Image (cartoon, rainbow, N blue to C red; front, side):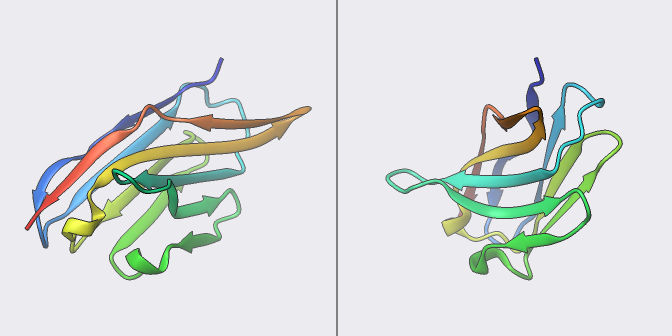
Length: 118
């Protein structure tokens, strides 16, 4: 059973940077969609950034120009470089992976806390 393992996150001051990493436990699956979501207390989970296997990316307006998503298709890893962090970026960040192999798979990581202090 494929699992997503996240690393990174933590506490940083406003204006600082953090890097989140996520790795699938198997490299044999061909993952199409890999992305990062976040959920702040009392708010709905929102898509922060995503990248398709072919390389196309998508970002939430609130993070454009500050966050960069990257992935390694061979290793089934996805990273999120977060720069110029703001207090409003504080949330639990979740890695997400989706692919189809006879059935549709939609996998979530366990979540990692990012806290930005003002």
